[in-house]
Length: 57
Image (cartoon, rainbow, N blue to C red; front, side, top):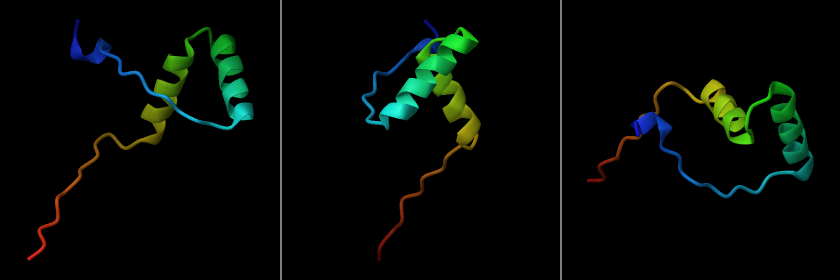
């Protein structure tokens, strides 16, 4: 299994109407809810996130 195919389980709390709309959209697009959320996050997030540790003197 390649690294790209590895999945991590997450528990999220979202507005019920948003959950309903996203489930409906995944049916319209004939993709899983997981795939729909992954596509949305990929479109929203920057290509790379850099987190720097700040040194406190």
